[in-house]
Length: 169
Length: 169
DNA sequence: AAAAATTATTTTAAGCTTAAAACAATAAAT
DNA sequence: ATTTATTGTTTTAAGCTTAAAATAATTTTT
Image (cartoon, rainbow over all chains, first blue to last red; front, side, top):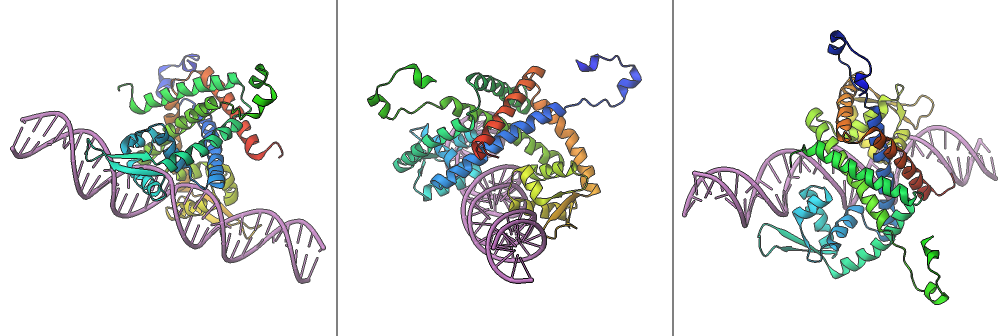
C-alpha cells in the first residue's frame, strides 16, 4: 500500500525500487533473541541441576507423551531435527538407561523408542522444575500478554509454514 | 491472585498445592517452534543459494555493522555464543578470506575481527536476499500484528533477562 | 613494585547438528 | 512376480556448540 501512495511514471517504475523490510528483520531478530536467551538459560539449569542436556530432555518430553513409544521418524518430525541426529541421541539415552529401542513388530525397518521406568521417573522430576523455570522466565507478562503473544505466534507459525511449504499441502 | 480466591485453612495450605504453569509452557514451546521453523528455513536457503552457514552469516552481519571491526569478546556477547565457539568460526572465515584477525593496538590480549572487502561485498549480496526471505516468512502478519508482536517480544526479553540476571544490574 | 584478581582468548573433550550417501525393508507399478 | 519407487534408519564427514581448563596480558590491590 505504501507503494501506491506516490504515483510513479513508467521510467521510475522500471528502476529497481527495493521495498524496505527492515521492520520484519528486526522482528525476526527479536524473536530469535528471545528464544536464544530462554533456551540458553534452560540449557544451563538443566545441566547444573540435573546434569542433562536440552536435546535429551526434549526427546524424553516427546516420549513421555507417548506411553507406547514413538517411531524414530515421528520423533524426528515432531522435534524438527534430522534422523541422523536422533540416531546418536537415542544411542546415548539407551546407554544411560533412559530409553529402550525396539524393532517395530509391524515394520522391520522401523525403530520404536520408549522411555524406561527410570527414564520416565527422572523426566517427570525434571519436567516439574522446568515448568517453574519457564513460568519465572515469562513472569512479567500478564494473562492478556500471554494470550496475545500466543495468538500472534500461532499466526507467525502459519505464515512461516505457508512460505516454506507453499500454499499447496 | 488465584491463590487467594479460595480461602484455605492451615491444613490445606500445608499440602503441596502446585500452581499450573502449562499455559506458559505452551507459550514457550510455540515461541521455540516459530524460531526453529524460521531459522531452519533460513539456514537451508543460505546453504542452497550461497553455500554459507548461518553462524558464518550471523558473524558477518555483526561485522558489517562495525566498519572498524570488533573485539572477539564483543562479538561473543552480541551473538550470545561462547568465546571458544567464535575462535573456530573466525578461523574458518579467515581461511575463506571473508574476515581478518588483527591484534588490538591498545591491548595485546585482544583480537580485532574485521570484514575484508570481498567479505563485505559478499555479505551485502546475501543480506539483500535474506531480508526478502524474512519478509516472506512473516508475510501473513499485518502491520499491527508486527507492531504488537514486537512489543510483546520486547517485554518477554526484559522478563527473561530479569529472571536470568536478577533485578540487580 | 610485587602479588592477586580480572579480562581476553584459545584449547580440549564431549556432544549436537546437518546434509548427503548408503542400506534395508515395504509399497506401488508394471 | 519383478521392477521401481518410497519409506525408515544409519553412517559419514564436516562443522557448530558448550563448559571447563589453560594461557597470556592487563588492571587492581597491597
